Amino acid sequence: MSVSSSIPQIGFDRFIQIDWATTALNVRIGTSSLDDLNALLDSAGLTLAAKKKTRTVLNRLWLEPRPEMADFVARAIDIYKSQPDISVAVLCWGIAIATYPFFGKVAELAGRLTALQGDCAAAEIHRRMSETYGEREGTRRMTNMVIQTQASWGALERVEKGKRVIRLPQMNISNEALTAWLIEAAVRCVGKPLSVPGLQSLAVLFPFAFTQPLAYVISNSSTLELRSEGSSNQFVAMRAEN
Image (tube, rainbow, N blue to C red):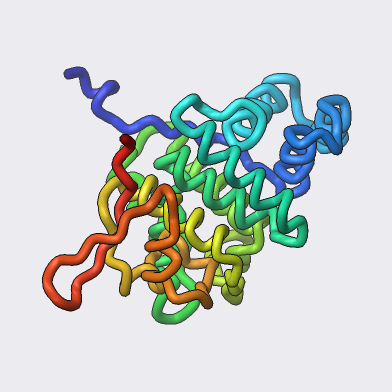
């Protein structure tokens, strides 16, 4: 295997402003048009190349998800249609961590590094991302774009000219369908069963606080499976397809 093929792909390589993502969702459900989305991107002053790359990420989030993500994204749209007051940023977060390992890794590091004191140095996130993705051109720039995106989506605040990031107050998640969907996003992101008691403090879901009893939510889900190991250890995994 060559060195280049062994380095993980970045994929999420654009800053995605929340109103762009919201408009892409509205295009998907038919309340906005592609012309509206293109006009929004044009007004941001993006170059043709930047606009094309931005559209690629927006397509993966909402408009043209990968085949293996299509049902997951469709269920996010169903949740939004049934609960239009739900923040689009929450749904974008779930899709992004499930679709883009790079986005998920930045989220996990930001969540872990801000867990104790509520903030961390951006340089620490960059250093740890380079350990996984290499000290290649683009890793630092794309990490910055993801941090900037997570700030636009209401999870972080960038201070000291971007040198530090602050964790913003968590968003309470009380909707049962959304709770199960976000847990599924985390399982998809991590790629293995997760401890149910650890979900409330799971780093990749740091912007959210769940108010529902999670074991109950998981047991009611058609896509998640509750597993027990011993008398007190419960795990959540993807339900095997029949």
